[in-house]
Length: 179
Image 1 (cartoon, rainbow, N blue to C red):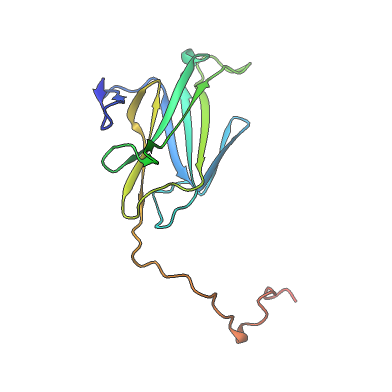
Image 2 (image 1 turned 180 degrees about the horizontal axis):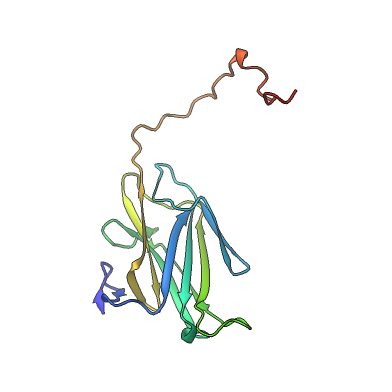
């Protein structure tokens, strides 16, 4: 195994991993009934102010790897590949999964394991880039990384009083054509 930028995490060489992973950053994500529900998916940049952020992950497990327990870990890395520290501790989320074979599923069908991790606000610095890196059973792959950029604070207009309504625009509580 090769070492990743984070020396504690081996990276699989150029051969494909045992499981396939899809990751997507979103405003929020949820798992229900074995499915991923994603709101505002496809985020690659946000900020400069902190905002909620969800990580939607789908792990595709081969049929022959069913009923095997796996450990997963999601690290937030800075643009140099080092763990992002919050109160002197790395920002890490981890857990376990096991893909079971549902009754009646055709043999050979890949099994899907959805994960949704939501952060109320990610403690990042404007103008910097970051990446979430997934590892499974202490191994990761180059494709198991999802990066994003935090916009710099320049050009952000200060919030002021709300705009005054145009008196010629009519009643703002009424929709045109619905008299």
